[in-house]
Image (cartoon, rainbow over all chains, first blue to last red; front, side, top):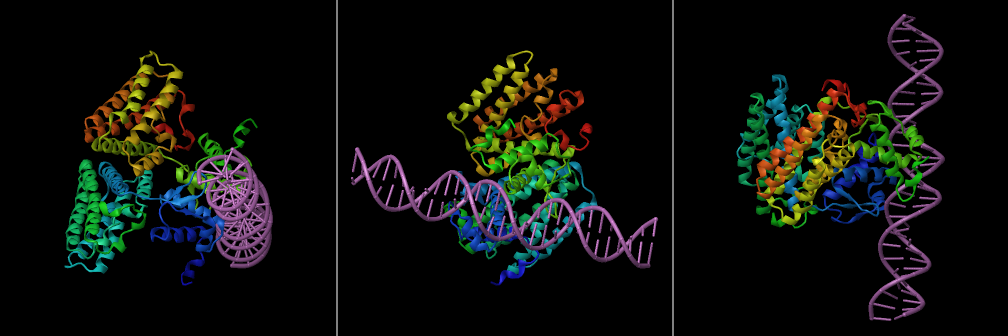
Length: 251
Length: 251
DNA sequence: TCCCGCACTATTGTATACATAACGTATCCA
DNA sequence: TGGATACGTTATGTATACAATAGTGCGGGA
């Protein structure tokens, strides 16, 4: 009864989509469980039409799976699915970096990237890194990746990267927060920032293969972050969509 | 009035989606043109609800673009978009081939691939290749690519490849038919078949990098096919979704 | 003559009523 | 006692009515 702020000036479809996405990611529905439209109507407070629209969009987003006989169920992910999604994102971001390098970018194009780089540098100078700084890092990191993707100047590729990053555990900083309390975290962030610097350098020097390779390796840091967080069992509540993952302990 | 065969046992949504897709790809709507729901209702003969569902799905498919103020318009593609979409598919198929190679496949897994290979060999023995054979090639080629994609055993990757191949000009054999009458066509098909053979060999020997590289190069044959067809101006009517492409003559 | 504003029209967003198909349950028969 | 069938319930698929908003055209004023 407190979130009625967004009632105005936002479509019912979007409202339903947000509410259902939160419900799924927070573990309110079990993987494999059928998601009833009527039940969703009660949960979201909107009528069936926008609920159905939201369900279709969430299916395209990858959170739901269509049931052959009709309707949708919550999708289940294996550990392998997560690792593959991360590798997939890395491959696509690598392609974007290669495009940027091969096609060339102007100094003006790189400006916002370098500002981002400098801002992250500022954050990493703090020892140890505060939780607030971690939160800022997530935002800056997301911005950096978005800017880098756009450097490719390829709408089809940008579109595909957005889709690949839509799954919360595949997004660039999906597992950063989960290990914010660990000492190893700072090291990984420093390495990640080095990758950022290298890819910019490679793009400036039009080294396509190098830019591509470093972005692929960069994505694999997410796997290390994930393993670290799972091994230390700290802040597992910060792991995105943990409830969607079958037997998440064995990664 | 003749296509009423499918009326039974197929949902109105699918019917609308097929009808609208055909309409778009055949050039019935101009790129950038707003696609009115009411107009679509008249065209497809179903009511607004399934039409809206179909429009959302076609947007996700990449054929439509959402208008900020509401509704959808037909998407326009540049030549660069097409080339990028092909490179994108090649990159993803390359990743699938690498996964297959690195993770290993059984002889039984490769059986259908090798049957496909043999069937294509049979086709290519004919000189010159008949139009019917071209048509068979398209089907076999699509099957080969689908089987290869599944060898990755990675649902997230398979899903992404399917989406990347949904655009007609990005699909594996999108431009094969368009140059069926050209003598160079047979050479390209022979080269393509060699790629097929190499990728299977690489996967069998667990050579991930080789498998990936050859699939990337393999996709670039589509670019050659496209250029060939455009330069010779033969069978331009077989070019998929030509009407969606802005200034297609300058590729 | 050009620009601003108002009103109208057309289009999309939303809600709901209806039809149809699927699933579960209970009962009956073997 | 087990299985199959029929019936009832509940789900989704579809159609349509209503509401709200954006786009458009006309008219008046500067």
